[in-house]
Length: 265
Image 1 (tube, one colour):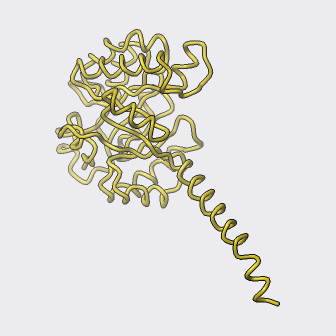
Image 2: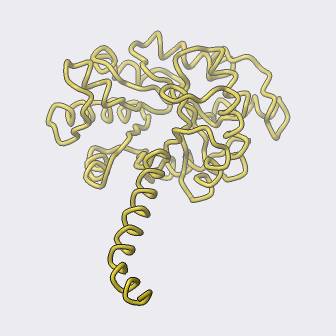
Image 3: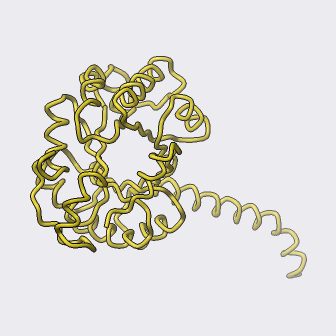
């Protein structure tokens, strides 16, 4: 059974909120899933996550109701189909540059006649037949627009049948244009890239999603028309929470040091 929380939020016209999972801890994944995020993205591309650890996180998340998207390492049909068979609710594919690459991705995600996915999902809570009949409508498919070539082809990629969402990779887009991987959403050139990607997606009845880093980025993403916002990353939440606790505890210790010394004397 596919967790449809994110899709239902988007189809109702709302903006979905996602948390990016950068680790491989099933218990952390379950905690995040129970907080109320519409979706999580489990990242296999830029982490040490193995297929087994991702499968364990999918299991931990399956009872939370949160939509589970897995960003696979690349456009590899065998890995995409294994992750889907393990119970993922959707797939994000990085570095999709052309229509042919987008179609190859759809082939891996969708069952015939829309795609070429092999039948054999072993973790469905429904029969294989029922899963087959529903999956093409319910499984979520996302391609990342991360290069000059992909941006030039954004409108054609968005038109590929079977895709649900375009999702830029701002750092790679900046590097592809000859810059550093700096996520300056206030930059007029970067703003133009985002506006084009959103327009390309919406023109074809598709959605657009974006990683955001702070309130100003969130506000810009909303203004640009993004439908899925990813304002939280597991690693960032861990560092932020731990840093805050360490700092405030240290300040309390310092402020109470004199009183404690007098009491002890």
